[in-house]
Amino acid sequence: NLTYFLKALVPVAEKAGVRLCVHPNDPPPKMSRGNGQVLNTLKDWKRLIETVDSPSNGLTFDSGVTRELGEDPVAVARYFASRDRMNDCHFRNVKLTKPNEKYTEVWNDEGDDNLLAVMKELIKNNYKRLVMPEHPRTMENDKGQKNGGYTGWVYNVGYARAMMQVALMELRGSKG
Image 1 (cartoon, rainbow, N blue to C red):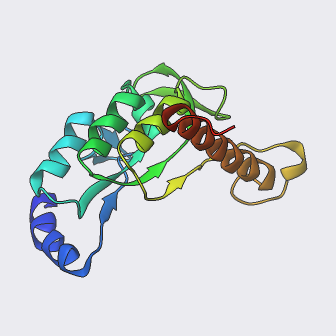
Image 2: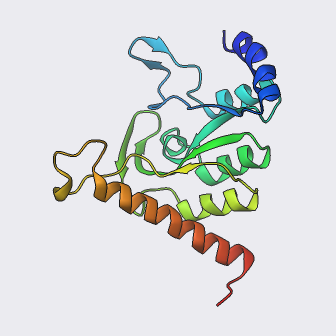
Image 3: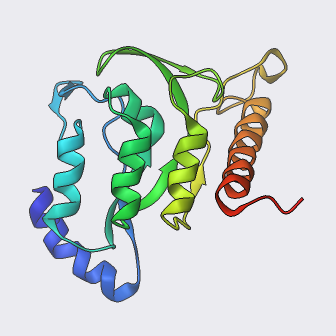
């Protein structure tokens, strides 16, 4: 079904100048709520972009889900960004206990991912689309707020911007 869908839709997206992206299964187990998952391994992600070879056929790279799979987010970011198939980026961190099964979402500076190295890969590969710092943590002053609360969002956006600034300085040289 996915192949049929992509072969029909990607040419239309190309003509319209649209870049499609699909978010890999999150969480990534083979079965979720009784349904088989088609994007729960890195091999599946690669198969997706190879099915119809076009920049209009890409995925949402999620650094957290990548780690949840037991994969290295830096290497995976490099793979998809270097092929211009990363059409959206979710920038978050987790602590992994057991791939595909047990992880904890954490503040971006507390997890197993090297988010500075991920950001460097985005910059090295001239990635220019959305970097969304998602899944904010909640603090006491956020009680009653929806979507993690304002403090978590401010922190995540600030952290992502800081990683971008440091990566740019390190890769392109400091102008200070």
